[in-house]
Structures are given as C-alpha cells and as structure tokens.
Length: 409
Image (spheres, rainbow, N blue to C red):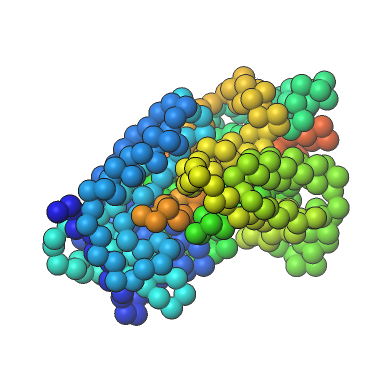
C-alpha cells in the first residue's frame, strides 16, 4: 500500500489567500478567488538540462505511482498536485514541489487534500499585521542607460534582418529591513491584480496575466499577450489609449509574431486549432495588453500527448524570447547582461489526471534565501519600430506590481 492521499469536500471557507495551517505556505495558483494554495513540502525535485520537461513528467509519474489516492471530490485540480516552476534557459535550475496540504476552490466548491495517515488538518484564518518595511533599491545587471543601449543594439539586429523580434528583460534588486511575509504578499497581489494568476513556487512569486497552457481533458488553451501600453488612471484617456493600442502597427506586429509561434507549436499535437482574426485589449490594473486566446483539441493518436510535451513545444514562445527562436535565445544571452533564472519560464500546476494550468512567470520576484529581499524582473518585446525610451517606460510599468506589493506589506 502506497502513501495515502485524501481529498475531501470543504464547507464554507475564506478566500484561499486568507487560509493558514500549521505548515508555511509554499505554493499558490490563484485567480479571481479560484485556484489552489499549498502548505509544507512533501517532496521536491530540482532539474536542469534540455530534458527537463520529460524528466519532470517521469518524476511526477514515479511519485504518483507511490500514492494511494482517496478522492471524494473529483474534477480538475483535486487530489495530489505537482507545482512546477521551470527555468527560462535549460542550463538553469527548474523546481518541482508536491505540497503536504492543498486547499482548492472553484466557484462555490472548495476541497482539501492532504498527504499521510494523519487526521484531516485544521485550517486557520491567516492574520498578520502590516510590517511597513523600509525598502531600498539597487540596479540589477544593467543600468537604465545601459539597457536602452542594448535595446538600440537589438533594433539594429532586427533592421539588419538577423531577427524579426527580440524580447529583452531587465532586473532590479529590492532590500527590506524586515522579513518578507509571503502569505501577506500573496494577499496584496491578489487584491491589486485580481485578473492575473498569483503564483508561488520555491520563493518565486508573481502576478502573471499570461497563460502559457491549460489542458483540461483534451482541450488546450493558450493566452498570448504581446503589445503593451501604460494606463494613466483617467478612464476616458485610457479608452483612447486602448483604441490606439489596437491600431498600433508596432504592437500588432509584435503580437502577430507571438500568436504565430504559439499556433505553430500547438499544431503538430492538435487535430484542430482556433486562432481569432484579431486580438482584444486586456485591461489590467496598471497596463493594457493586446491579447489572443489560441485554443485546440489534442489529437488522440497512438502516442499520448501530456502537458509536459505541450510545454516543451511551447516554451519559449515569441512573447518571452523572440523570432526566430534560436537566434533570439543567442541574442538574449549576448545582450541582457543577467541570468533570467525562472523568470519568463512556465509556472503552475498539474494534477494526477494530467490536467493543469501553467502561465509564464511574469511580473515576478524571487525572494532571496534570507527572506529579506527580492530580485524583480520585467521584459519588453523589441521590433524594428521600437524606441528605447518607450521600452524603458514600459519595463518600469511592468516592475510596478512587485514593487508596490512589497512596499505595502
């Protein structure tokens, strides 16, 4: 008999981010009140190398084989859950975590999963007083001026025909005089950015608006974001800006590359795909994006396609890398002046049935080992019409979510 995994329906529970147990919060995937939050660590695995997606699939399959699952709830996201946070580059470390306790919610249904023969764990209400940390900031790999120079170099490479699009990221370092309360940070991000996915895996935390892949039975969905404009806070002005974004040749060009890369990656694994003719404008708290939802039906062939296979095909998309992919990856390593780590990599969860949701780790911070600081990231899509000053302003807008959330703890 294997390790016992029990899933039971719950009665009325508070918001997922307001729940605590005797174990620390270690994982989350929350959007609009629905999702999953995990406590403690039952098992974890670090992966590196070009086979990290197939290695993750094999490890999850091996771990599942050890479980005796008693699931009285059923449905996607119930039972044992694997949380995954993959590095952008295959030569950096990716992290897999199976929490000891998981609370899930979808609409008016909530459930609890725990590992082991212990009685059902008690849930508590998370209570914390604001700590009002004093934050100091330092530059990351490149200064603002240096990063704009790299944008100019990227534009020159694009105009020469070497590339069609390149995504350049930058980082900033934040130091706090107090320990960062991760549970409170999740609450802050959820409150400010309810239409994004609030994720946490191995100290990588963020609020991403971009869903790389959702697999539900045989239906695949990928939300592509590319093309950004900063909000002003004036409703009439922002409506006008949304209209200009939807007509911007530079942003539409950037968006087309990203959509095309996703559709082409999914095509070999799907019997049919649907790509809308034009994007919609996604309104977030501080920015607006051009967005397209690409959908498909997984081909029921002799060789089953799991979510890790789809991840391997989709990552890195043009939205976080560029086009052509291999040339863009080389240009990133030459121009960015930093290590991305797990920023811009796939992050999310997979259940025992193979269903799952993984976004792209954007609007992200990596909490340091001491727990008193974070490295935060932002990236911009560069095309022939890009202006370095505009791209700098866009990157600063994308750093705001993590900066603001940390400042309001």
